[in-house]
Image (tube, rainbow, N blue to C red; front, side, top):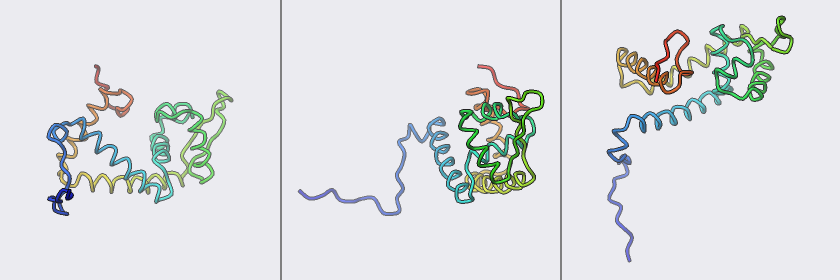
Length: 169
């Protein structure tokens, strides 16, 4: 019995079934996985992690300095955050101090070096965003961002930015 002939040209790309190609949930999930993978790789190549970026971004807002609050905002186990903060502190990117109001808590702050690192990491993430969103003009990007924030806040209120109301289910 002879093997089946290869009828697909080498340049052909695999096609999704129509039901998947037209499903926003499937496409968002697939795109999310790909973007997370690429961001992970690019940040790792730059000597950082997605979690480093998240912690630095939270601290840069200046609204969340307690270790427990940072863990909650990023949905990290508190013991996992301790390890992350140890690494960031060793690199001089964050500083931890005992909270004078409650000696059991640590207040965490971004150092000037940490602010510089965040700027560098943001540039990496923004370059990835620009690449992925290249087919959209600035108005379409703004609208996509608005729609994604709306959907994310309804699916999970913790995904809404602080200054935007959370959609109620």
